Length: 199
Image (cartoon, rainbow, N blue to C red; front, side, top):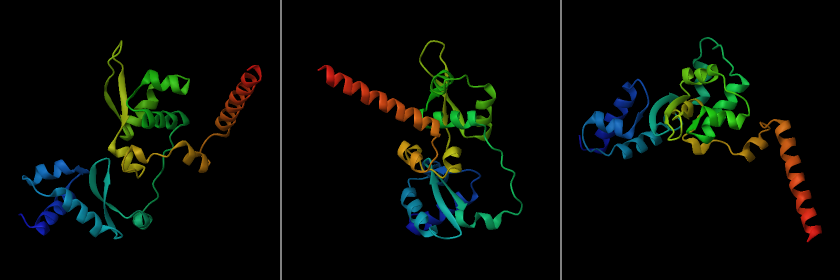
């Protein structure tokens, strides 16, 4: 199985039969040998682009999925969506932007205690995972996002998370937060002016 087409077919078969997304290393291990898996994945990605089923990479793992624009056609019944509480959304955002992060660090950023149930919901959804213990007194457990989180939100990696300017442009920042930010900027500007007058 040294021909490029044979490797591509084998990689395609492995991904099609897999129960969960696989990394390039996982695929190479399954096929047993030093094959050009990366090249085959690139070729398959291009080959499936724009078709009803696409090959996508999320967090370093590859899988086939229905093209996003066709998903509504395949839903037989409307899924009941469970909305996350505001606390859960805030906790998830803090973990995504600051991972790995401990419960105490999440609480320090949010300014309130994190209920145990909040983290449980995120762990149960598969969006958050324990990420080891911090080398600090008490050795607190830290949390990080998962490949499932990236896949659910359509992100290739955490680098694709929107920045503050993107969030402002989309109108997703709380008006109170924006008002506080403007007030802080105004205070800083007046302090600078006062300092200039004294000089």
